[in-house]
Image (tube, rainbow, N blue to C red; front, side):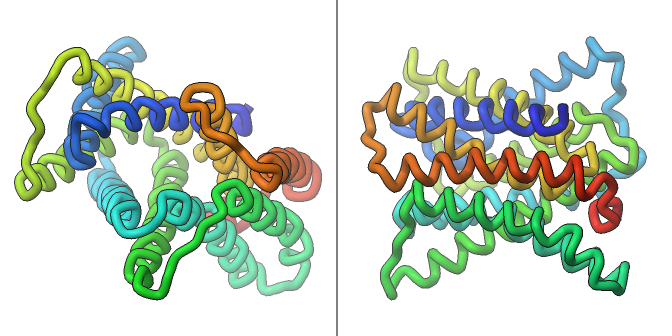
Length: 296
């Protein structure tokens, strides 16, 4: 079920990306971040009331840290998009799964101090690398020498995204419900987006184009809820790998909605992503029923 939660989250995020593509013709990135957060806060508040979950937290600093690293990642990604080809910026951001796998494997080795841990988790780590290879095949990233700064910022966006996802897992292990975690992250997005709008300005609302902001916020909130539920399982490395399924959904949407063409190497990359996800699921269930690094 935890694997399905991450796949569902990826579907919601890919659907949100379609809406953002339409909305970006009328609103700048900071506006979309801010309005997405606003809609998400209202939606999550309603969900919390229905579930009877209080939004009051006893771990405010953990939520602050999650919001900070998540906002830095998002801002760095938007900045990288402005300096790099979109495919390159997306690939560097999706390196978050590789960073997560590296952190967890390194932590397990340090804490366990024996080679057996490498033998147990090494194959799972390789599935993450294989999935990232599939992402690179689909997006085919490239950049020139004068885009080194953008590449560094894009790499940083993936690193901070990994820290944000690990913090989501830590909040879940501390007993925080998904809706509370998503609510405070949405609040942080509102603050970051509003601050950016102070410097870059705001666009005039036109109808019906402004209606795109509603599904963006709702889909973002649903994706965050599913993603948080997935990371709460403790199968962090598996979930990080299945996050690549978002690229598969995005590629299919590009074909069906925008009429984009996917070359043979793109289809092979999509197959590699799917195969690595299946392999990771099987390996996690059979070989690593309780990975020590993920528990920490």
